[in-house]
Image 1 (cartoon, rainbow, N blue to C red):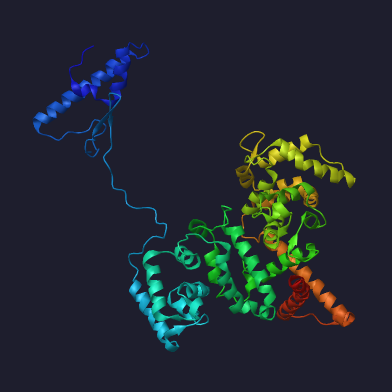
Image 2 (cartoon, rainbow, N blue to C red):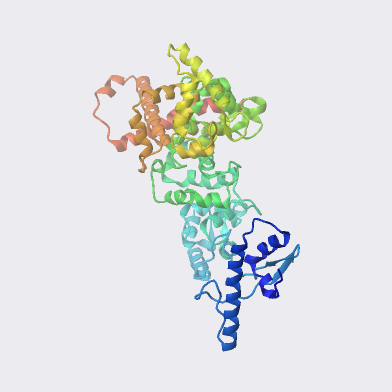
Length: 531
């Protein structure tokens, strides 16, 4: 079949079928080819007639189509391929924030200069940096990072010239709060935040926040509180588990918003995210109870005593295997630090949390293949069965339990449970407790299944499991400290007969009791450290 029309060979729809016909392929229908050939020839005749009349060419695909420039033809293996013309795509990724073209940076710098003029010698120390931070339209507690970034740690003060030079560079190169915050806190030429970067900021919070004034009499607890807050920040914000908070992670978190709330809320316990002193007190007291030698490290035997040995030995072995801990201390010496205990406690008491789901998944994934196999589930359930039999409780056969768990999780792949499945099902807390926390597993078994489903379907802004646990434990700890204090004073009977104490006074007494209780513990700890 001879085709004289050269443009016909360039038709993208016919090119392939022409090749098949040339090879003698029998699966190309001749009738279909003739029909398309006829349509193509009619289009060519119509285009020639319009050319003669002087009318613009109309694409065959549609009358309303806009004319497009012809793409250059690139030949690959003797086949012509249309290559699209290069298109200028505007920038859509701004790692340092989207620049604000309407922002007047010079006006901001003039406002900062005026704030410095109100200070003596136009110099600001750390306590006066709060006014400068507000002149920069930044949260009050950015003052310590600003002070350090402008060289205040070396001289003890910041001059107007050094601060203006630093802030001008920041304004013109970093365009959102997250990028500015990271640049202020991070080490030079580093675009992420490590744990030690937060220490100056949090020390300033301890020194100046009105809700932590009682800690001035207990400086030995500053480092414990700061360690707790840092671990809670990384537990929530560092979703990649790298130990380094990136700009993207910081933007996706609520940390900067929570930090801004500190200047508005005098009662720091109302800010349950990251900074609550009550939460720190609960975590530290729980650690102190387990740390029998008070060297700020606990071993597997110590950790197994938590909550009356509710957790199985096999899951505790996995924790100490390095599956969820960093550093060589845990693997080589078999010891867990206070920082690692913070992660354990929050994960244990709030298994609905995303980080907690990842924490326990890492522990149960024995071979690290990203999937919980039936073998791994049976491995952890065996110890649960042994413990139930020792208590005189007949355990459910593993096959029946496995059917329940698969119905609960509804994995995408049969017989394989992934991390994605556990996050999607919203029942991860029941799943995990079934395999390694006997006390909570029995509690779930005795609960009304309709009540469990109601909890899952409730999307309201209720406090998390961790917030509820910390509040309950704090009340218990304060009550125990108060009772022991009354017994020591010999006025327990008078205490029962007294009138109820107003909540405000109770809060003040609670702080004093907490400090006294911690001071006693710290006195012992201090002597251990000196030795």
